[in-house]
Amino acid sequence: MKKIFIDGGARIGETVEIILDPREDLKGCDVYFFECNDSHYDTLNNIKETNKNYNFIIRTEALWDKEDTMNFYISVDKWGDLGCTLDPTKIEKLDLDNPKQVKTIRFSDFLNQFSDDDYIIVKLDIEGAEYNVVSDLLSSGAINKINEIYIEWHDGFFNKNSSQLKHELSKLDIIVNNNWM
Image (cartoon, rainbow, N blue to C red; front, side, top):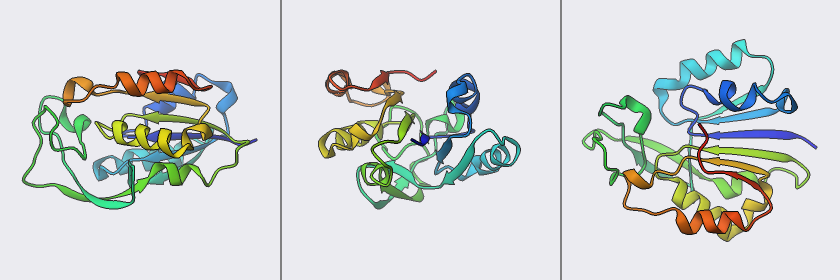
């Protein structure tokens, strides 16, 4: 059994200190950083070079419910680039005039490369994309590859409600954390 940690919306890799380092059982695991905001690549590469407790793989695609190329909007409000998103309806000031084109991957397909015996932990802080991604994980059955999932729901920033998805997740035999920090 292999242990895998997938960090959707890795930003500056803070999950290493918050989630990974406190858990001895995760030392040596493969860590996939998914981050499409290139302003964070130097920080993530520095973590990869200096922290030998894990096998880091940095991916520059955004997690989504299909393969595509989409607009990625940078937040320009008080939160800085914390709120970058694929969804231009976010209730936050976004630079809508200068979107960055990013590749997306279907997260369900990505998970299918792993063995059913692998222990997979997922963190999703993907600024509104979690609704599409989790819906697709549930409908495709790929959610069954996941043993633990941490999700930052952004109901207050979008005209969306996560209650139905939370209910569906609660019926599964996986550990669900509806807030990762």
